[in-house]
Amino acid sequence: ARSIPDMHAILASPIPARVGAFAPARVTRVTPPRAVLTRARVSVAGASKFRFSVRIGVDHMKTMRSRSSRRVGRSAVSVRASAAAAAAPSSDSTPDAQNVSLIAIARAMCFYVVTLCLAVPLFTAMVFMFPFTYAVDRYRRYALSFINDLWAIVSTSLFIKVTVVGRENLPAPNVGAVYVANHASYLDIYALFHLRRPFKFISKVSNFIIPVIGWAMYMTGHIALKRTDRKSQMKTLKECRELLQQNCPVLFFPEGTRSADGTMGDFKKGAFSVAAKEKALVVPITLVGTGAAMTNGKEWMLRNKPGIKVIVHPPVVCEDAQKCCDECYKTIKETLVRES
Image 1: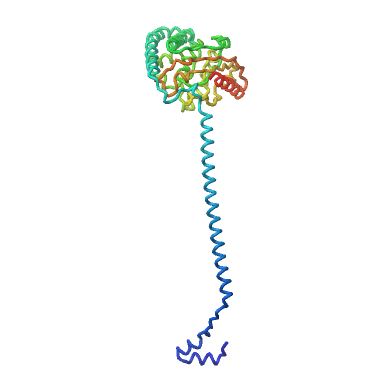
Image 2: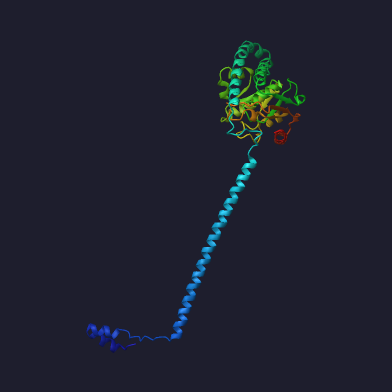
């Protein structure tokens, strides 16, 4: 520390003298002993080896983590593949997508030709019968339903065998019952006409526009539905309740649409709610072999083996809609798996 007079003297001196006065003292370099330098080098080398070993360890951990993630990924893929294989329908229920048969294509074309040729004269008969039938039997329209049954039975019997099992479980034609069945193929409705019951089924509006066949459906009294219209759905259920009140049976496919891959889908509760409200019998029906005969999306092929079975189960008294839905689903599903 300098005194105040010294500071005044420094400030009064020239600038170079001032800089020299405030310059710090020169530090003398001290050379450490050789042993100290040796220990320093060793310590630095040890630290670098430690850092190198840590880096190796980190890289090893990253490598092991990536390998384990690849193993987990492969395991997940294999698990998903196994699950998909387990969920896929068996080859007995749905033919292989690549199995295209010229005979099956020719059989399908002949089936459609015969169906159309039968439909034209039968539709002409329905046109003349409709006014009288509508006046006398407005709801069941049994005479027109008989023509529907005749058309379907003759059309299918020429190309594929349809067997009805459990016909004794069917209620009488004049009993208002709810028939529920699985839905896998275009042939399902043809097979159900073999029951020879005047049921009315629900179909989308576009089917009623088809010439001859759609018009015949309208005259028979089947119910049109706009699938995306909530009001149409409620109106359809109301019409089904009115039919049941008039002792006319109705047919539902509780899955809502045809199965895309041959496996049975979940049941919707609408049909069972109608049955519960009207205290009607519910008749579960299992359709076996329709998907194998004519696969959904491949309506241009028709196979005649192994044939079609329509299995009618004992009627169920429906009091609780959900309980009845679960019971019918279980009955149809177990029979379908066993028979397939």
